[in-house]
Image 1 (cartoon, rainbow, N blue to C red):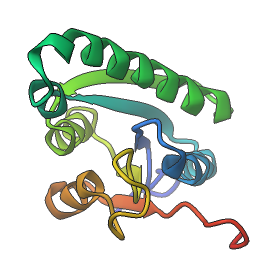
Image 2 (cartoon, helix red, strand yellow):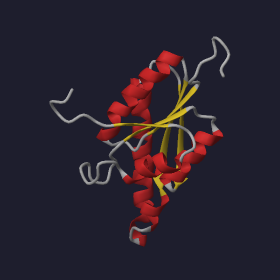
Image 3 (cartoon, rainbow, N blue to C red):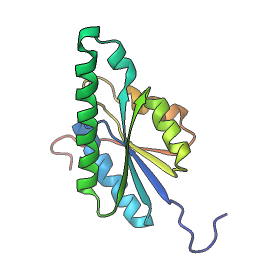
Length: 151
């Protein structure tokens, strides 16, 4: 039971991969944060498995490209926000890093898009989003990007 005047949602973590499919998740989760006057965190995870599975001669270049993409993704969240955004870049297994970050920061909700960088229409829900939903003890809000004409 929460005390009167205490917010139900104090911390929102937005997990972003920089893809177009996360844009609506950013807007919706920032709206949620605004309604509850919650702190906003934006998290990007450099997928260590993706780097390790690439040819050795390309790993440094891929790692740098993914880090750069992460900075751009985090800037996008900041650009949409009407409040301070705590940003973080982590490296490892994306679902595990999102879970750990949410726990470490006492997140009340984790927001993510439903489709990621690897093939916009390949699955109904992206593999990272699905793993986060299945394994994260923090409530997870998945937001589907609308197709043209659905808005």
